[in-house]
Length: 424
Image 1 (tube, helix red, strand yellow):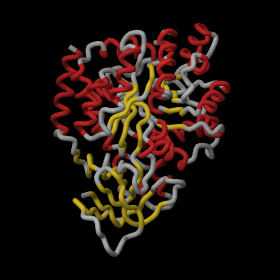
Image 2 (cartoon, rainbow, N blue to C red):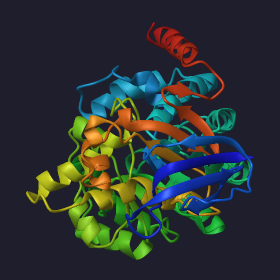
Image 3 (cartoon, rainbow, N blue to C red):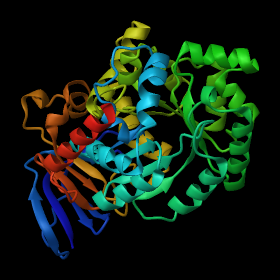
Image 4 (cartoon, rainbow, N blue to C red):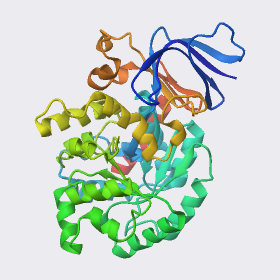
């Protein structure tokens, strides 16, 4: 049994931004048909949904986030990055228990779903809690460790890589570490060996601030990217989160190693970290994806706001309104994010691919007139347009209602109660 969407506009994103009119069917967790309306329907359906001309597209992929950091939303604002981390974030994080990761991340999943996000690339503590939550809620999650000198170990990471890549179809695991400035050279060398062992990519925060790059140059005489490459950490690719201050040589390494830059414009703007060289990265053919970062620094987990900021800030930086098109940005949010996260079966809509998708309501004033649906999504779209979000063939959000096994009001009460305890 599956679901039939009909009278739909469909943006498959297979090769281009062409929008077709017709139907999309699902069977279990996969897409079973995309195309024009059929006179005879042989497959039985659990539901048949008339979309009345609304748009189906691949779900957005949040390619960098810290889901449980919803507990610090609007708690430590208006501070420079290092003060924000060392004086506010780290002390509060030290108080967290495993069950807190589960409950605060559930709040994030509500927000992802209402933004049309069908998968997140989550870097945080207690991966067992996020893996359990993914299965319990039905939300696709790729885990990546924040390995550093203060918690977690190489042995734990190796064990997690093997465990969570065989845990559940909704859960996978990539290698990574927090950042060069929190991680010893010995740990990075150990991670390089594990990357070689599994022939796996590595992901990390990279060149987020001027101070980060200057500190690495002082310690090692190299940028963070050059250091990681010299240590053999990038032999199998991977990606960097933020990448605001990549040099030309760093970009050469990203290109050579097939790495992805994950831009986090909302967080970088709010923390005054800077604006990456997005136009130059795209010109060089370096793939880019988009992340929200955590709610502690960005405050909201909204892919529409991130898409607008990616292109808007790039245009402002270059003083050129023609750079970083809406089409390129939408590709970053859907296709490139999936590739970065290793979700090759969730990058576009086609028969046999995973049924990870969202439906946007075009019958809203911000989507009219329909001169260009793609440009409307990036330049005027918002969460109010998300009518439905499906993950693995199951509808988890529809018209303001969530289907993840718990009443949202109960989630809110628990989150507020626990936050008061943590602050007390």
